[in-house]
Length: 383
Image 1: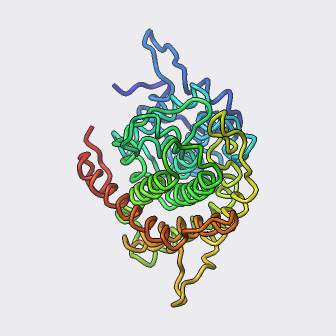
Image 2 (image 1 turned 180 degrees about the vertical axis):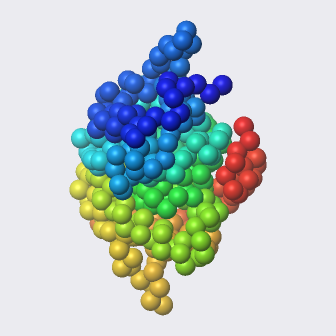
Image 3 (image 1 turned 60 degrees about the vertical axis):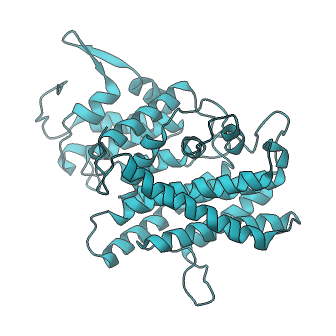
């Protein structure tokens, strides 16, 4: 049933957009509000459900009060971003951003599940926020895509604070849906690249972080990286942005806009709140090499400065499926090579091939999983 806390025709200005923007600047208030409910005419109304699913959001700058922001969903995205990440939507995450707490993690679960069930809930105007939210939950996303349900996944992808409990199905659908939007895609693409680059360095520095071999850890990281990047690549491939040239420009421009955000992600190391700490036995790692190496890598992705021997961009953002695999592989290979060389470790040539093969497996999993979960390539999930 559609609920209403007021008339559909609100008038010259929708006060809810201002309220959402205020929440977007106040993480504690946004988390509390979006985790709670109100009673209206004797019926309990869940705030998050109402705002995402039931509320009529009028369109136009006359309602938002901002000429450059004609959609109230943009303001809703800001509130969601603040509520789930723990920092204002217009500031970047940093090494000082606290680990996610219980309410933040549960909200993120609900948002991912809702968008997975109904892709239309990822409204125009809020996909950039959804992408940045995913970026700050990369350890959780990678854990959800790992078939190993033993304690190994916590060692592969350590999380400090409260972890989400995302299903592989919900994660895959969510990533594909958000990947259809250029800004959503760019945030996930860059955040995932930064996270896995730091993570490769982390496991090379701390072979004791995983009870098994570092080889197994690196293989797992590359496979799940392929699944994340493959899922958003499917979304991008199925976006409805004009022709290929127009789409490429939209996505390339979005990657440029996301550069500052990605720099913040680099500074969080292996995830918000972790600061390169995996277990008490490991202790604090040396983050200097990792953040420098990864920061340079992200700058190359954003600027497109890296060239192969043929003069083509190594970090391609084209719509072609093979280009996406090639780019994902190149990022991981460069991350491994740079980190291994900085630490005086060998086997670089071996791992160039190993990482490429595991990325291939991950991309294949992304494609087959989205088909298997009843998600057509236009993004409507059947729950």
